[in-house]
Length: 159
Image (cartoon, rainbow, N blue to C red; front, side):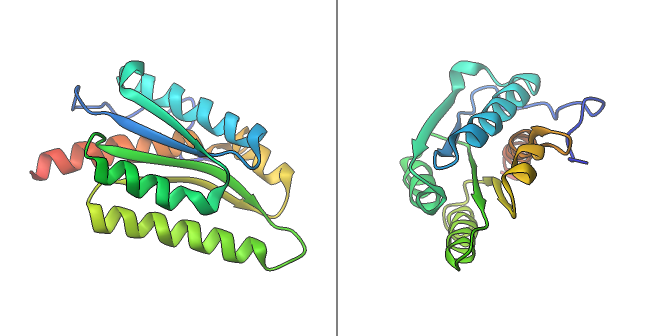
């Protein structure tokens, strides 16, 4: 089961002025839209004003780190939520893209000190991705929204 479920309350955003950017990899757009819906819904539950959430779309998961870095270095956002899906195929493409995306997002977080919450699914099948984007296993977009809120609050507490 997902870390986020209907019985677990969303963490409360303690920084009312915080802007959150969501970067969505469009390659598997049906899954990406479900992740985006989960993230947006959870941010509202956490008390984030919808007007303080910016959504940016990129072609695929490989482009997520650069988009995240541009947003982080722009200085306007307190956190970035990266969403999308990489689904295993018959070639090494899955491994290359998923590794590059995850390592790149990690580097952006560490280099810029702007949290990048990972809502990128890396699954073997479309059915597994659907189960993790609002299906039986939860919604990784919701989980990433929770992580972003917690990290924004932590960063503010430690400042």
